[in-house]
Image (cartoon, rainbow, N blue to C red; front, side, top):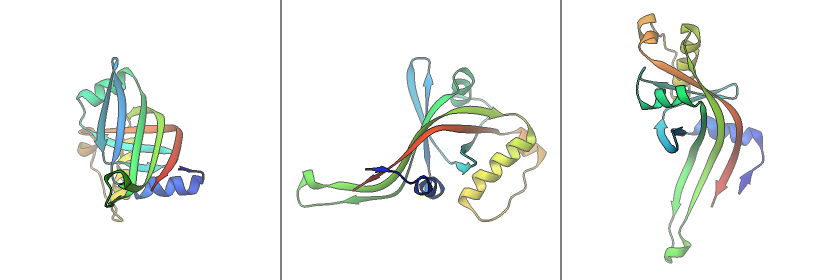
Length: 146
């Protein structure tokens, strides 16, 4: 069932734990599970400076994503009656690999804020050694399963 409330969709984004980010590698799909943060209609991720994901995003910044929260398997005596209760958000966006230290610091702060209420400082060396990706969300919709 589609979730109509934008506030409820944002709540799901704020309570999820893993984001599955889908990219296109040439003509083939490629998906990776990532820790993330959400702020100002954007998702933020961190990454190694090099690798398949960074190469793909450099070639094609169009992505899709899926975040699931509050997942619970509902069992039944009949196999065909099993179901899943869940909340999810799926969407599309454009990825940008952030280059400026202030932008990278902001992205890492959003990511860490998603998982902790603690504040963190990131040294210049740490910011140089990590890639930070911002996905500006173009479309998204929430779904509820049960």
